[in-house]
Length: 195
Image 1: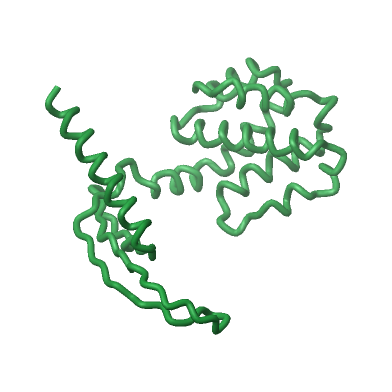
Image 2 (image 1 turned 90 degrees about the vertical axis):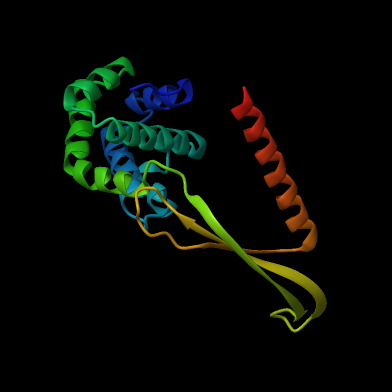
């Protein structure tokens, strides 16, 4: 596992018992796992009373570092010895390493299922449909009288899982900008393929 210096510094701060007491470490670790595994998890968990004495910037940095480490371990299907070695390099003591590994093993299967559902290939646009709508009033009953384009991108994935179409609304200027960027991308791709 290779993680950025930013993530490593967050893990080193998390390993520091002067900054994170054992109970604060436990809460932050469980929060990091829950934020990855539970779509309904929110930032309220970082407001836990045990974490109140920790600077919010440090708390968020360490939370992001722990979540990144968990994701990388899941992505590489890391075993306990790989995780232990990496956390030792980040100055974790034996007890914290054991706790991290136990929590990881407990949630490993769910994490791998979630990571597997994301897929490895980007979506492929198969068709585009659009229509022009003319907005007369807003929700607040203000008169606007402006045109807008409703664009729908029909997409598929090579792993044959179904994906909902991507739809958005834009003004004529935004649509012209979008089309210009698509043309630039097509030209760049054409130049790259000729090399």
